[in-house]
Image (tube, rainbow, N blue to C red; front, side, top):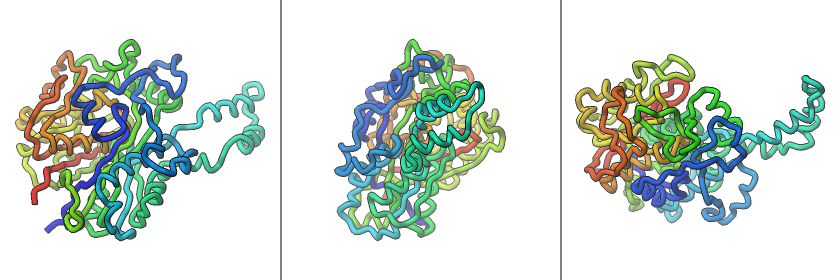
Length: 427
């Protein structure tokens, strides 16, 4: 019999709330976390809004928060979300073998020290050429090497391991927008094959800085609805014009079932299916027929041992870009056949925006809460149906529903596809 993996703790930092309860309440009340950017002056950018984390202070979560003062925002969000999840799980009051306790994140790089870099570049210009010797001298004078190391993608996992004495497997993946879902799937596999009993898994990211916004604007991937930021994320709506860049973290405690039962842990649900594929197509474009996404959904269903009529809810990748929403709809219909039209699909990105590497883990939490509470979070800002997006997107209002199994999709740049299936826990 295959080893069963359950979720025993959850925590998050998001644009709509800095705890699981706050986030879930906001989604049910259809409150947007999108507003004008305050992290830097974005007045000259094509996109001037984002989903920023608000009113966040790491000291609200950790007694020694000053120890992490030099870390990037993504690291601080990760630490706060992990602390919530570990506390929620009751692990702090149990005896977990350190070498059987690991961390697997999908975490992105920290915010770039963009202004420092640009000032150094400007100060080392000699006419139209950069004096590299002067640039190097200014770097040695002005930059903090330790701080620069703190921006590396793996640093969040390292800090979390140190905080909780997790001496087992420690990994980080950065498969773009699929990263934290990939981490959850791979952490599940680590437990299934007996390499760990408990894993802290999820993701963290913050790309709300000049370099991040510029890059996505150059790709024409961001919405430019500057006159109405809270309406900008419009998944599956005919008038959608791009995604909303957001930041945050989501963490889950994954645990081998017998280990969880032995310590009397509360169980939110079970991870029963994991699929991971590549489009093998283009770096920035999803395959137009959704071949990788379709195969990924099918793989997750096969891993879970489920038929297409046994999924009660799909939390879509649903970015609000013209191509993604159309192709994801096509992939769901191809993978589920006629059952696609019977299955509710919604995108919580309509309220939270796109947390990039952290998106999948927060959406996984939404799936577990939908199972727990029997409520489907809605797709807000849905006004004009798109003939190419013709599924039930739970428009504009949360919906009571019996949810025994939920599918979560995450599709990233580079054609990285991950689907996860969560099930209510049955003894």
